[in-house]
Length: 128
Image (cartoon, rainbow, N blue to C red; front, side, top):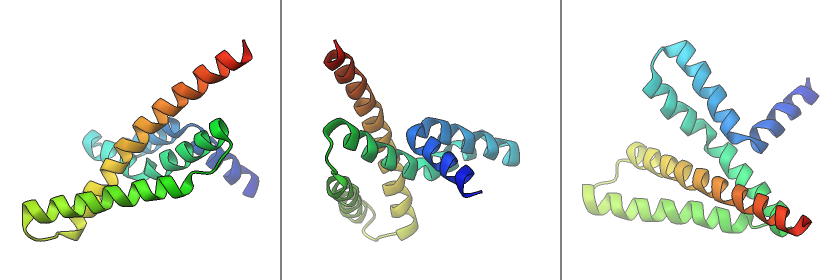
């Protein structure tokens, strides 16, 4: 059982788009609502993309930049909190947290795509 779980976690971290898709399909089958499935899949897969970006950075530069990813995550939270306070004049924690979480999904999704492309290109040119 623990081997199967380790295999599933490794696959989802290596291919977070597959993890996103699996969560999306399961949610659509259960709820029959595509928009809700997209939101839930994005919310769940934030952790997949953060882990994938961490391991891609570790593979490309052979250094752990976890502190930088954590700083980036909290910097987004700080900026969203300030903007939310300026616009709404009051802080609605649930709405704020959802916005922070979903923005981090977009940010880490694009970081994943950029770093994956960069890693592939650099490995191709290094091997030539």
